[in-house]
Image 1 (tube, one colour):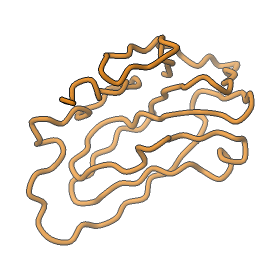
Image 2 (cartoon, helix red, strand yellow):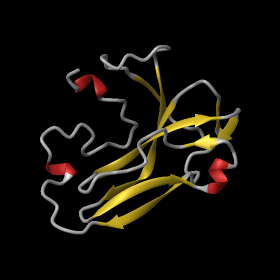
Image 3 (cartoon, helix red, strand yellow):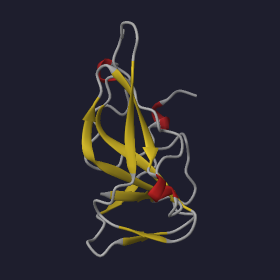
Image 4 (tube, one colour):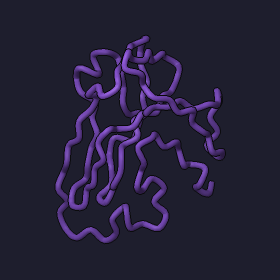
Length: 140
């Protein structure tokens, strides 16, 4: 599943909603200047490691960036990863296409509060669809 934000101008204090769509079997063309959100097919749980999401070199060589800033997860993250996708030029992508890889780093010491135990965790238990920014839940 994928989506793009409906608003032309995103507002950090507003709930910017997503228009969802499925990538068809024949593929879908991504265009520059449109910010897409995707979701991983894989569900992951990390209870003793810090996960890092990186794009594959083959994906990068097609001009596809799969994350803008959120390449690091938290210990205790459980869910599907939302991908922040942008492209350098039009490129056709396909459902199930491998675009990234996870790297796990062990944590030394005791973990006081895991992400899935935090009361204010905005992205815990992410579903099988992209999740938009929850910045609007912050106080600023």
